[in-house]
Length: 488
Image (cartoon, rainbow, N blue to C red; front, side):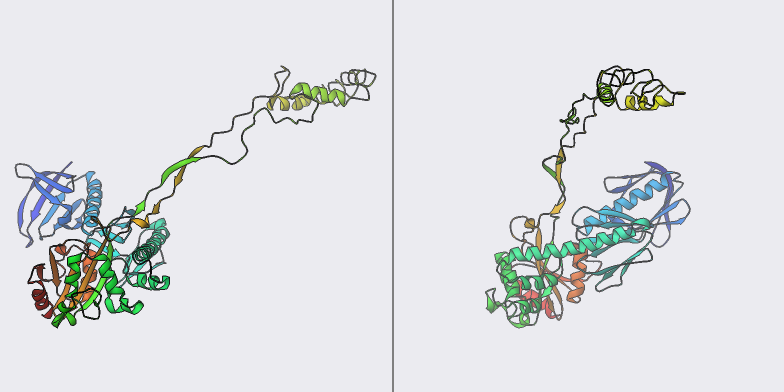
């Protein structure tokens, strides 16, 4: 919570009130608590833009046009802007029904989020969603990432710094993964379909994209009708039969319902993923190092006749002193290992291993043996350090559970829908959920498809983008009312 000077302006620019207030971000709200006045909670979804018209002043434009200016925030200004950015990003992701957990990047003043199914950019001017199904290509040039999008201008992301290449690679990977999910879903839904036909259908039926029934039937005869039959609830099949052309829904039954305008409507079938099937990494079993196990104390050669440590060194020197161990010139003879003037290991005048020559330079060998763990105390080698224990749990890497993609059941993870284009508009019908009404919108099928995808296929949020012609309940008058609306 921070203290600020606030001012509320109407959409016309007229000042409504001003004063001192406490400002706090919590529970998905920006809470403005003026002194001596009622509290003003503002949902993040109602904040249109966030700008700084002058230093240390934050200006919020609400969806209704009202403006709130916050000044004198001091050091809390940066924190407030960060909280507003994160909160607006979460609200935009919820509104767009983004699937999965987000990978977050910063592109200048904007926040870039990469989900399983879409790219979400939140900036001062609002939020923008780009579905991977409508993305055509990702290019990197001059530290800028450009995403080509069907039906609109490309999205250009700059000021990413060292993460430019990382973002481009992530976008490319997510687009490829989306196509893999579609292919796996269709292969499971249509196990008897030829693999090449599945590939062709998956190339058209990208996540959230409605494909004309004629194009699907061109891949395999009756493919559109088969998909609708497998995905739709029993009562929805009859409704779809009343929407599409006779040739597009010939396998659905109730062919007598396909009459008049129904034969003029262009039917398109689509599927949209509703929940993430990405599974995090998890440990499943212990893992053991396959290298040689530690064997401390067993490093001496088994064929040697000398003990480890200094005793073995002395014995080796004695044995190397001459032809006899104790005779003249031998290990302990006058010219042997301990002789006074011989060349033995400890002879004071000879160049022995530990000989006492000029200065103390000859002690280097002795101290070298001491550093290795040997010494005159007879304790032998220093104990070898125990090897670190490298036994650990094996992590199964994060992956996607493609078997979880299902279009049937009480809680399907894939939404099945159809769009029917008539002269008067486009009808949107959900196939595998008991939706109470059919929506009809003005416009072209492709434009309605993109708009629905941008709001997570929630038609209630399309009022500001498309003009709804009507909402038709599934009753006895449904066929006639749909026909009238699509006729225009």
